[in-house]
Length: 191
Image 1: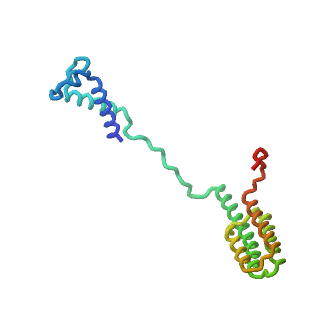
Image 2: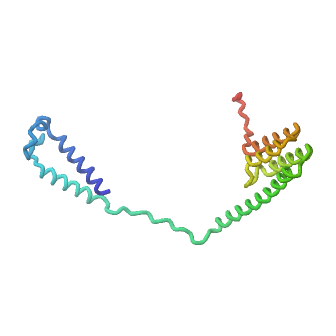
Image 3: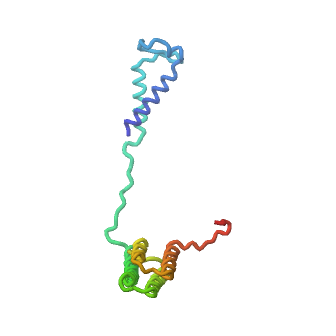
């Protein structure tokens, strides 16, 4: 850091010195050791270095040597009451989601294994739709795509009447609505 400051200062002072030379003196022979500035004073390489060193030492002596670092944050060894309350809420939420997931899994399992008729398919799909409405979406651990794959697997098995397809599409629409309930209507936009 200090070296960078020193080099920057050195470049600035030598550039300033170089700019003070007149253009006629600039074109003069560079073989001579001493040069004359625009003010007419003789300048040697040694005086330039001495001036630069004195100026840089003065500059560096005014800069703070060690900047104070802010103290490192201290971590709590014991959890606070607020943290414990949030952890209790999180555990309660997970328990509720697990109970809801069990209900979903019962219906999905019944749909995949026991349902054989149109009436059974519609009942299970409507029950899934009611659970989605009741819980405000799918619970943690049940993915929308996996649910759709299970239902489509049953659909591809063969027997899939039109009324069952209506119930399946209603379930898809309800899941999409629960995930993004855009209830604000934009009357200005015709699309």
